[in-house]
Amino acid sequence: MLHVYSLSQGELVSIDGKHPMVYNYNYIMRDVNQASIKGGSMNGERIKLARKRAGLSLRDLADKIDSLVSAQAIGKYERGEMTPSSEVLVALSKTLDVSIPYLMAPQAVELGRVDFRTKSTTSAKDRAKVETEVLEWVERYLQIEEILSLESAVWSVPEGLPSNVTTPDNAEELAVQLREKWSLGTDPIPNMTELLEEKGIKVLIVDLPDKVSGLTCIVKQPNREGGTPVIIVNKRISLERRRFTMAHELGHRLIKSEGLEERAVEKLCDRFAGAFIASKAHLESEIGKCRSAFGYSEILTLKKLYRISGVGFLMRLAQIGAIDENAKEYAFRTFASGWRTSETDPLETEKQRGEFEKPRRFERLVYRALAEDMISPMKAAELLRQSIAKVEEGLKGPARADANNR
Image (cartoon, rainbow, N blue to C red; front, side, top):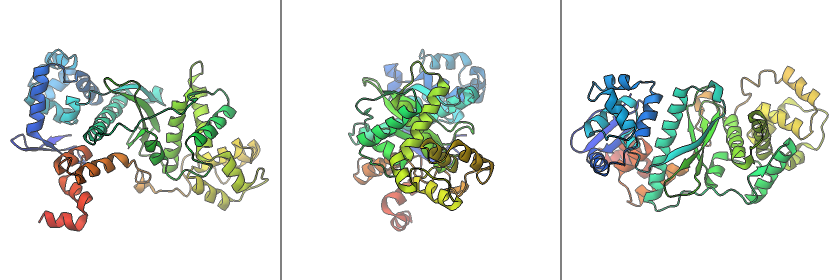
């Protein structure tokens, strides 16, 4: 729940349960008043999405804000027929556990083509929760890019792509082509998150429902053609699986899926992901083209080299013909019998989930703007959803930050 500690002049300090967030109340109220005058700046869809995320009916939401307005009035907000007052806006923000800037929608972005990979098992509430978080995060991202006068890191589909991929061999070839177009060579990819961010794909790692490993969507901005692709990955899964999920979702951006069944497309994206993470040429140089047997220790060493799961690595060996199907099935019946449910010798522990290969570009841009006095520490705290003390520490280092706060 979002707790608002002060609604007086100056700062509005709020907490979402984990991260303290700081907003300048006067600026927010100025934006609210401007929205009322213009009659079009409020985004009613945001209220509706946040309400669905919270699992509330219109009447439930009216009750939770102590009947400041009626359910009918909230319905009108959602349809864009009315604009809430400052008091109502703050109450909605608190009750729906979203920031006021999110409800104000300063960037007027929207999500298009949101593709969950487990649609049948993803509830409407879970979908709304993820979409709300993505929208809020993307808007903060676009704000800092605008402040720095940066074009959003542009996603440019490599020439000749998306590609007609209908067979596993086509998916393998696509991975080789992309490595060539991006000048990656054949070596293992050290940081999948950083690579995708460099190429204009925004990456968000957050808690998702257990059965959802990841999803992809397009962020649309007014007066701009196309859109910015975003890949969202479940923080709860292992680093090995997060890397594979990112490569899989990248495959969805590059493979034409018209005329193919969803299950077939998923398999092709899986094949692309395996080939992109562990290129056939590099793998064969490490292990030879055909093997009669592998040692357990060798498999663990190689899976760490490619930063891929044990299951993914065994599947990859079979895909390139290094082992046959019988050898693969034997492995899953014997020493790898538990690998499908628990990662063996993982790159990170469960307590470290989400800490390795984190997206860094957004945070880096915020600190760049702060260091160049383009934003205040308060604004940086709002963007990063951190306390001002933590932002000061990130800018000046622990010792200097502590000295300034004495």
